[in-house]
Image (tube, rainbow, N blue to C red; front, side, top):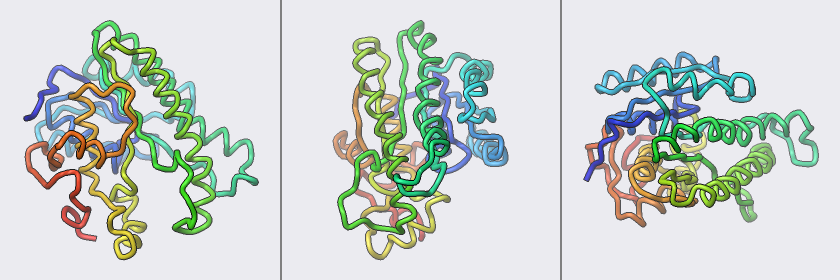
Amino acid sequence: MTHTLESHVALITGASRGIGRAIAQRLAAHGAAVVVSASPRSVTGLSETVALIEQAGGRAAFIESDLSNETERAALIARAAEKFGAIDILINNAAGISAYAPPSKMDLSARRSMFELNFQAPVDLIQQVLPAMKERGWGRIINISSEMAQQPRPPFEGPAKMIHALALYGASKAALERTSLGLAAELADSRIDVSVLSPYKIAVTEGALAIAKQMQTSHPEWLEPVEMMAEAAYQLVIGSHNGLITHSRELLRSLNAKLHALDGKTVLGDGSTPASAVIQL
């Protein structure tokens, strides 16, 4: 069963490619008007995201905004609302790694940059979007996280450079997860749901192709098609899952939900479908 989102307006950050773009396409496929955002250096990708949505018959617009700059992000929700109306679906997907260094050598500037984009920005956007959601009496806030919010157990897979950098990245995501739970408790019974969604391990996007090809031989079960995250985000939007922290496969399996293509119609499988069944690596 599909649910229409025709009366809703979504903002997805970090949507010039990858997970953000996939979620934008999926929500638009169900009728939501979609505003996508990314940094000024990603304007070409944002234009491509909008074009893909419009070619499929959806409504979309883009806004370039540097979320690491608090002045720029302070106006993002208001600017987004000028496109199609008040935002009632917020997907905080934008994130990044500001420096590749071990925790003992990560300087203050790098630590601040990491938390500014990965934690402060989504919290600021949430605070901006809540008044309109409360006025409407409905809203969905989905914060995209990572399994790195939990320290992996040794032996660590991958190059030391990445393992070290992911420590602080994971700390910023852990902060976002904890804040999300607190906000969910605050908004209980308001019909505004706050949830946290992560890929199981690695969502195979254009930016993750290199690592996906490496893992295809040793850990193929770690890989999931990007459609898995888009499906999970859609399920969180149409359902009521306040205070849920979950990963894509876990959610689809718990709901016994089918995995659909980004058109929202074509069935690709279910929560157990491997990346190899959807994408050629």
